[in-house]
Length: 268
Image (tube, rainbow, N blue to C red; front, top):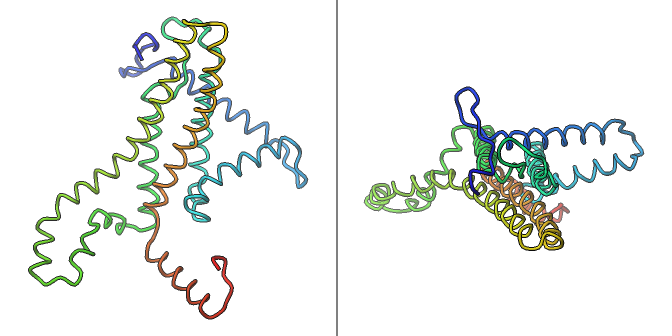
C-alpha cells in the first residue's frame, strides 16, 4: 500500500498515521456503545438484544473452549475482546468511509495498517508469557530445553554430555519459535486486509457499478475469517504456553483409573 493512503503526522516526536488512529478509536467507540446498549437492562428472561449479547458471548467462549476447554475461561476476556475488535476494524473498512475527504490519505480498515496487526500480535505475545508464568512460574522457561530431557534420559554419561554439548542450537530455535508465532499472526491479518483494500480500489476503477459489490461481499467473509483465525490461534498459543503438563497427566491418570474401576466420567 502506498504512503498516499496514510495521513502522516507526529505525536510527541513520533510518526503516526492519523487516519489509522481515527479508525481505531471509531472501532473502539462502536464496541463500547454496542456493549452498553446490548447490556443496558439484563433480565432473567432475556430480551432480543440480550439474546444477541449472549450469542456474541457464546461465540467468543467457543473459541477458548475449543482450545483449552474450561481452562480457557481464564483468558476469555482477552480473546473475546481481541476477536470483536479485529472483526469491527475489518468490517468498518467495508463502509464507504473513503468518500470522506481528509487532508491526506483515506479512511481504510485499521487492520490494513501494519502497525495495528503488529500491536495486536505483541499483545498476544505478552499475554501468553503472562499466563505461562502465572501458571508455571519460572518453570515456564523449561520448555526452551525441549526435547533435551527426553534425549538424555537413560543415556550413559558420555552420551548425556554429547547431547548437552550439541543441543544449544535447539535452545535458540525454541526461543525463536515464541517470537515467530505473533509474527505469523501479524503478517496473515495484514496481508489479507491489504489485498482486500487493493481489490476494492481496482474494482472501483474497472467496473464502478457492479464489481465493487462482489468484492465487498467477499471481503465481509474475509473479515470474519481473519478475526476468527487471529483469535483462535492466539487462544491456542496461550493455551499451550499456560498448560501444566504435570497436572494434565495427573488428571488423565485419575480419569483412566476411574474408568477402569467402572466409575463413569465425562470422558467415558
